[in-house]
Length: 464
Image 1: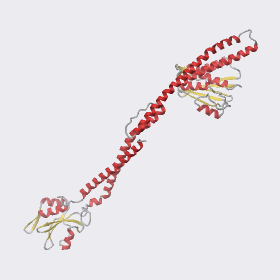
Image 2: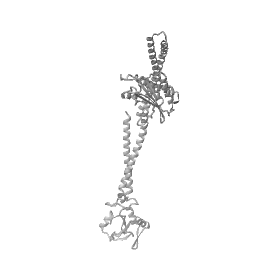
Image 3: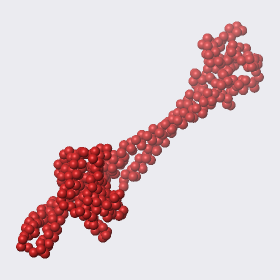
Image 4: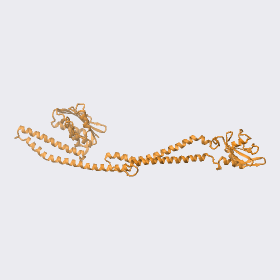
């Protein structure tokens, strides 16, 4: 994969760039600091040059000396004192008014040698030559760092920790800026890739910009998206073909089956048929009806599975609809061993949903029929409709044989209820529950299977 070494090379490049940039900035910063802090003998502002300027501007009139007004003002303003040491007597023959008391008035040759590159009583001194002797300027004690020679400014040494912290802060800020700049750029490149990876399982078409350091990844994701889209189209074609095939088979079965049912009904009502043959005819009629219902369920399930079943949605009162289904069962000569109890509160007269009335009626019918089919010894079926928040909840329970926890787990987490590897289960819950689940989900609802507190199976439907 070429993107990984390319990305690593970019990281290394950024690192080297950061180091070089930091080195340049630190060198420039150091140079600026040194330029500002070190006195330059060639600069007119340096104490070396200024001492000579003062010596040149000191003039003698008779036995007295006078200094240029500007120099006097500058010396006073900067708190710099000055003395003129006679070349022969080594005595101070002139000084400024601000001369400290502890500055001596006479010097030896050794003292003069020391003060030309050092201090007098802690004052940094600079000298300039005059026709009448040696001019000495004494700077404030904390103006220059006390070194072998008064080279370092005192403020520089005193402020060195702050300078160090400033330099460190600049380095940290620069590194942070580089990091944010690079990670921001990388994040902007990675975000579309992460989003596209999230979109791929949702069957969304992905089209990434195939440029930059992550171009190879973008190319692969785009290619994967195209493959998934093509596969989805092929799968859709197969699903439509399978649904069409099931619809065709259902039609082919129903046509001859209608003839079987018609002739069998005639035979069942025939007066010439013996009792034994009438009994056989009833069996044929009952099984044929089961085949017809099974074909109808298979066709409906197939349409719901592939979203080919149109929904004729209207406002439906689920209390009235479920009650009508219960009444229909009771009016259709349901066996005495199957009692149906209506547990809906009398105060609840309506529970409105926007749905396909016929499909929901089919779902409730399947649930009640499911309790009857799987409890051959008989059971009591409990039907309840409730209004909970913004949902209508329909619950159909029984006190029959129920199912085990393992079977319940499998039913709640199986995509359909037709396959059973457990010989004991014998596919007891087949298309009936599958169709109910498909109808509920087509209405954006939810179906939950559970144990009923009456002892059997409980099926709960939540409809928005």
